Image 1 (cartoon, rainbow, N blue to C red):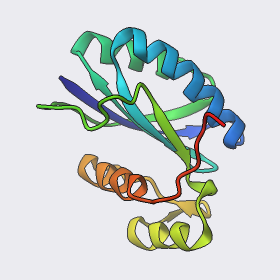
Image 2 (cartoon, rainbow, N blue to C red):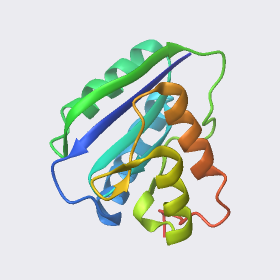
Image 3 (cartoon, helix red, strand yellow):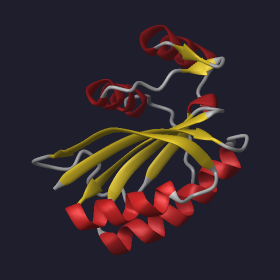
Length: 145
């Protein structure tokens, strides 16, 4: 089992409609490839984790790299792991801008600020810590609504 984490800069304004489009397409593709993962987005950047077999993670990442909605793709981590963190999630995602102001302010204090939003870390362990922090929020928006 492999886990890949990357960060990229959006080439478009990232809003909830963009995230929903990405998640709908990712969910269908990822179920076929047995990929699981999580996508975070700010108004300017993406941070994504994908997990699965080596070949499937590579194929998925190559498709992601070709997506014109982002650029400046930075591979943060690519490693062998014992188990999935996102088992059962073909793809989940969230726009940090959808969180209430208090939560967003806490994330900015903990992880830093970038272009007026929360800074997505470039260290694998810190990126996973941020995703864990976000996942622990009780009232996350449901992207399927």
